[in-house]
Amino acid sequence: MRTLKYSVAWRCIAVLLVGALLSGCGPRSLELDAADDGGRATLKVGETLTLKLKSSPTTGYGREFVGFDEQDVLTLEERSFKSDSMLLGAGRVDTFQFTAVAAGEADIALIYRRPWKQDEPPLKTFSFHVTAR
Image (cartoon, rainbow, N blue to C red):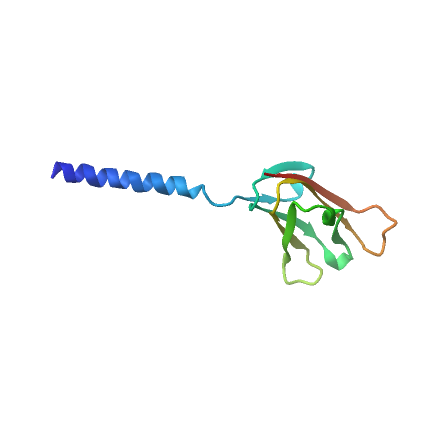
């Protein structure tokens, strides 16, 4: 009887250890927002990065990538937005999801401006450096 109790206890411990080890095995997902402007991160190929930035499209301002097409380290998997409310003129959060697809370095750079006012400096900028391995 005593041997059975020890056997069950050791099996429970083994199951817990295997679960703890496997919980860290999936690809990592890094989440960024405006506070991460100017930052850096290292990702493994296959890991994702999600960037969320507030915007107000009813004022005519929008986010534009700067030089993103000139790299092959990150791909933009999805671009979406979610309104803060159902009211007219409400702000929203723009979400950009990237995946590291090759080893190397890449910069994510966005400007926030009215597209018809290209001679004026952007209202806001965002940049982030990614190293993928």
